[in-house]
Length: 204
Image 1 (cartoon, rainbow, N blue to C red):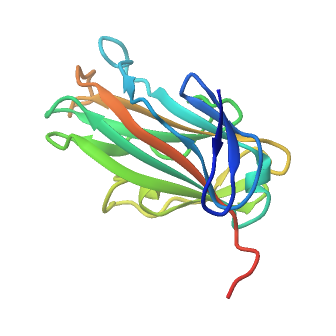
Image 2: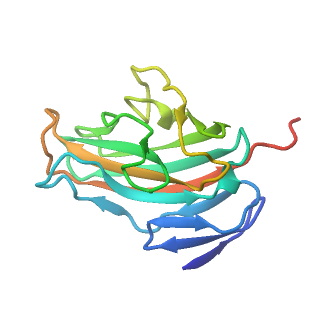
């Protein structure tokens, strides 16, 4: 489905497939290039294994990360249907749009625990080199992406060359009991939005 998005600094065309993947067709200024319409439910851990399940992804063209200082921002809202166990949120960047890509944060990054049923935040990725991204703001925190963290801000990480490759930005999750066992609680990605924010050409 081809969708034209207007407003703001520029207009872009987005190609959406199955509500879970988007491809930017044309460049411009700061623009939202993908917005999830239907919540995505994670049922991978119910009676299965503690393996992160891809909930959504967006393909960002190399033109949107062509210079140092360019930013991709991911907004997300995650919920779970119980009041006992934990839900984890994970991000990946790479060529495949799967959990086999480079993991951005630790698998122990807890988004929801116990009676906390809903969390919302955003994470930014800023290009600092042709193969290097920096994590920024709340979602960059290692042990708690929606508040204070006991860990330091993570180091920059390596990705495929952004001068020559389009990159997928992927969000995944899984649930587990406090003891690390399989949980019957189900995590849902209620919102997922991707915004490209170019480095300003003029700085006042």
